[in-house]
Image (cartoon, rainbow, N blue to C red; front, side):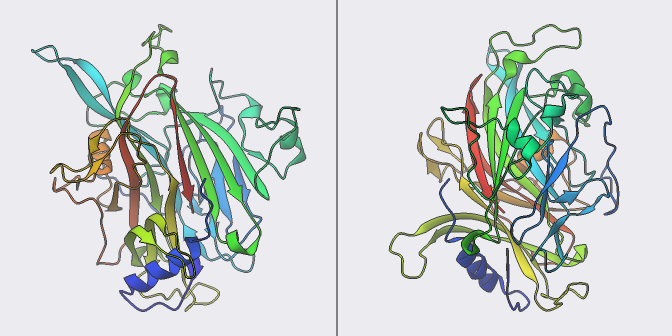
Length: 411
């Protein structure tokens, strides 16, 4: 996140400014929802939110994927530059995990695949299909809260430890939590007709956050997601194991979805930067996979400095590797070899009126298609100011039972 003097349609200026900020990063029926709508929280869960607040980004995180939002109030929760101002930049964000799963066989005996998406934040409703905690999941376990390295009680049960059983921390303020998509009651019965009991993919997510107070990183929070296929532990409502040998999740896409309201929600724009950037004085270029949200005219009357409006960017610092040689476009012109990082393979834009309505539309968008027109265009840029939201994706790859992939996002 950074501040700059902005002229309308100054996309290049926005991109260069945000790139300059990120060059020092380490490698590691449509339902309208009002912006003040509050989620229906399951009070039986150990639902928890904590805040990254040691640098200039105030970023709320939760133990069911949603971040950037004041969930209790149903309002924007990410502020910059903190603590000097409470200028809001993110209304809500989270992850989506989409995959193809087998749904019987066709007349030739070939497996029939259907798409499912486990939603960590739905920008249209504000809901999440994730459940706090690890496995076996017990959503009442108090240890499944969000842990913060700056909290003495959390340090005592910190799960990352060295050979001498001492807690290991990597930044001025680490966070740690787990959540999963196993609870069928948290999933939404979409118009695609897939039964609730078949909707969980069987995934466990370990989320670790890093925030630094040193000047080079004071405008960044890193979020690391380790996604594990735990489908061997999926059960039917009567307790029967669904997949004794687990199920391979095929053509998996991981996406970070964001409703990034910069002040007033209705005047935002979306763009992206994907490519190599050589920092001044450096010979080695840095590859960026960057989704960008900026204010249309660079003016926000409610901000502390109305003409000093910043930009929000999401950069994939690390993405999964291709599990086979794969073309990521339908024309088969873009080939990623097995073992190569996939990077950002698409970025798609929605509005309040055009959010994907079901898992089929969500997965279609994650692949890079316009889920309404059916046209393929990997990367969207907006030209009309609106209440924008976007999802930037990486995929496809296969995830075998008990396998784990990692995505690292810089916000």
